[in-house]
Image 1 (cartoon, rainbow, N blue to C red):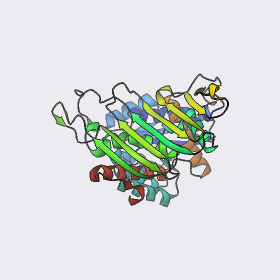
Image 2: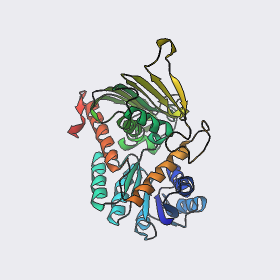
Image 3: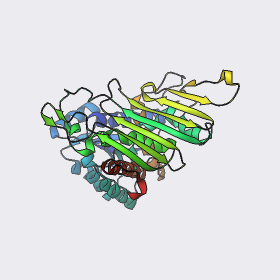
Image 4: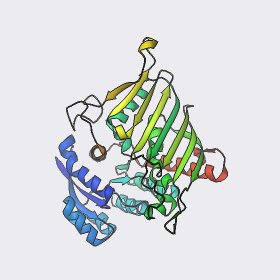
Length: 367
């Protein structure tokens, strides 16, 4: 098994998740490449040194440019705030280094376009960190839909709702400043990606976006708390998406419901090891939703556990993501979702903002 040196820009919540994933993925999936935690860079040298010691990196860099320039760093994971995604990615690609970037791709649509251009010009492996669609249950939902088990999709409802800012007295932070850090930049990309993965491309949207708590302890809030959009998919299906960071009681409300001509599939990430399935077959008196507990028969489950119903967790999604990234590097073949998917999501978000501002439907191809 060949080693590959991993550098991670960002050492906080997601930096830790990616460090743990890279340390574990070779044992879980027996990957062709074995990651070596080479270098970490954080917001300050002191933080970097702390993460180095805590996560097991060989060294810490004082700035991200030093990390990218290090020849021992052969692939880069970007787990920093959105505004840093573009310069780090462009620098890494310029040095021929594969990049796994957390969502969203960048702070703006222009960032996303530039990052795709840099990725494709380099020929390097590139992936965007949409981890929730990688649960064994959601992967199986995609397979059921592709097989036609619920027929032609007619309607989709999706949401990504949490309550970390539901309390009006909660203090302001970086999350309440700047459009890129609002709900449309933070939570919406996951469910837009999920909708695209499950149903297909979105062609047009009508959106409303709002800030409910405009002031937090005297500090103005400059971004959005919640948003909703009606949408139309390329296959003709109707859809509705809702995103909120003030949805009281919701802790991980990544949920969807899909209706087809032959059945229906609901899913809720708070119960991520169960998928519900209704199929319109058999006697009417015996029809109903069936709860499918994930197990070794479902995608990417067995490497974690051989017991059905024992379940996987959030960190396992990041390990699956690491496996896919290493596969793309080892094979030289793109593994979904590449930066192209990140750009596609950014275009939907841009259309939603335009719709909010004009109070009209907007087509995605305008952006």
